[in-house]
Amino acid sequence: MGRPRRFNKVQDLEAAWDEYRSRCDNMLAMTHAFSAENSSFISKKLQRSTIYTIQGFCMFAGLSRQAFHKYYCSDERYVDAATRIREQCEVDAREKFELGLIPTQLAGLWMANHGYSTKADTNLAASVPMVC
Image 1 (cartoon, helix red, strand yellow):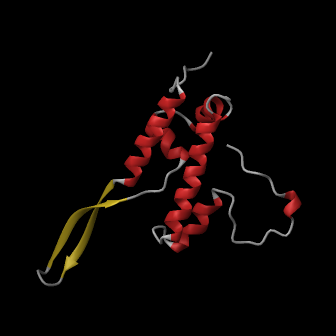
Image 2 (spheres, helix red, strand yellow):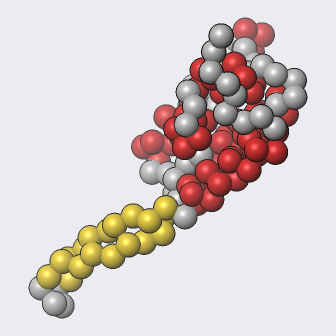
């Protein structure tokens, strides 16, 4: 017998996901710059956003990625919500890449998480569809 589910209703899962997205969109990051005018360093907290990830959501929600896939991606009651979460992670990464919020040298790494590649796929019949 395993641990009980963290979310007993789809609405609870969706509410936690919305909280996580809000947290990602409103992160505060301390930045530092040198002011030649004042000959000193200036520090300031700026609002930044981070990329949504299922792993980050699991850490935020206090459950393992394995539990997320076992309890939510495999259960027909939760599969739509889990699929939307995965799709929102992909769209968020793609939008942040296209807006230049992801450094171009990291874009390939992030987009590879969602099945994109910088290489041409010459064997389309062997392509495997993404699953939750």
